[in-house]
Length: 125
Image (cartoon, rainbow, N blue to C red; front, side, top):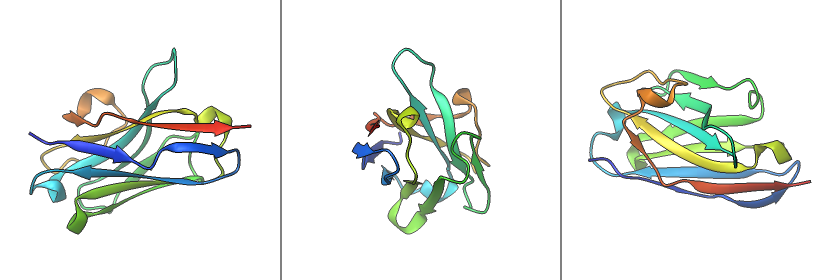
């Protein structure tokens, strides 16, 4: 069983920045692809960014490309999402997810095996 715990959410003004962290339990973090998703009220969960198990491959939704950066530190069992130039439409609960067995990362919810509980990000205009 893998446990994922997100942190770093909060309230920020438009144009500001936040860095989300997701800490994973277990000794196999280096073999997991990791993803970030978000869900706004009344909307479906949507893909934000993903990183392969090696860290060599990263993927982004068009809506965040150039503003958000996903990275990982396997020594700390942690994946990060640096969010810059935040917009009110980025307001959502942000979730991290793990795809086990040396995944390459995916934009699809069903590809992930474990999920965190989410952290709220609110961007005021």
